[in-house]
Length: 155
Image (cartoon, rainbow, N blue to C red; front, side, top):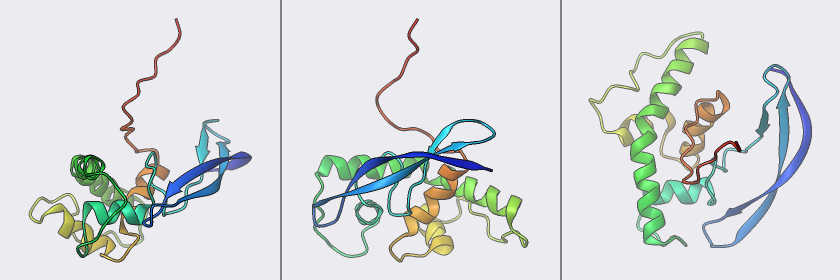
């Protein structure tokens, strides 16, 4: 795909210390479909306001920790993750089969192991696993928008 840089926009992300960091994200227009895309680094998850490491720790804690997040936000993250993790794994497996020189032998979509174990086998447990999982999905236009606001056409 061919992209043209058409500008940039600011994006705020909350870190694990509770501070907000501001980043400049490039806006790109696809030459073939003419849609606008935003170039997100791995530590920014689409439509989420917290750093990917904070979300990872909220979803799948590696050790007891104190996150600067409400209990209701942690609950929503866990529900969001549980609802979409199998879908993301299926998409990643499909992309690997389509683009890899040697297709994977393990079946990511198999339910024989819990989702956390399947993700751990493929993406590891080191910080950054969530970005490795969701960015191929978003970059190949398979992202399911989970925003609660509903947009309608003016009639």
